[in-house]
Image 1: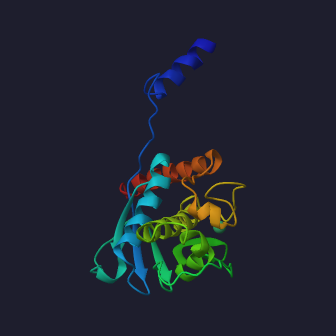
Image 2: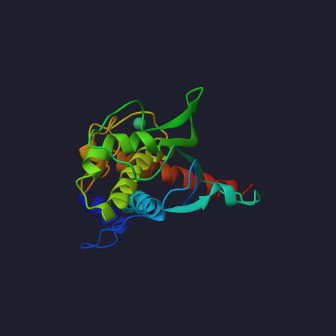
Image 3: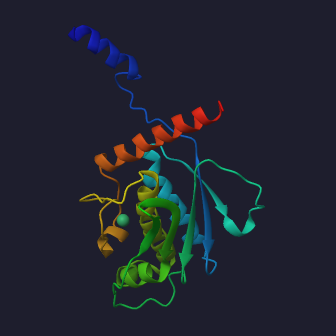
Length: 211
Ligand SMILES: [Zn+2]
């Protein structure tokens, strides 16, 4: 009996020394900025979301909401609005925290794929830490912080949960250290929730094509 179970397990594992992450169909992220961000901020933001999500198997295609023709239809998408000024200029040495850094819309208990990120609050929280970096590195570090806030909101949408983790990207509140540290990842539990939900979505969209 034990041997049979062992064989089934060996069948789903690709190899003894291989660790493979299933990759799912890419999710389209439509972004809009109240004020156009510097290229360095936007690039660092996208790279950070991808760095956090790729090990889990989630991939993204980024689109500018203002440049879409209105004829595109994607099964999996989210719309991200960046509020305020998304640059790392005019920093002061006094960080402050006022209100939410980001939020995802919920209606009648249903999580909607609409997220807002407050660029001003992320800058105000991290600015004293950003000043420690060389001037030419501040935009990239600020963009990375925005990417972490966005990854948190995408977790709510694509794990389809309002719950939070105790540590890591899914935790309820971030401090400056979380946003500026070299490394910030999801914990295993939240990674599994995201993967389980992606697998469910893939099965649903396959079933949909049979209609
Ligand atoms: Zn949250």
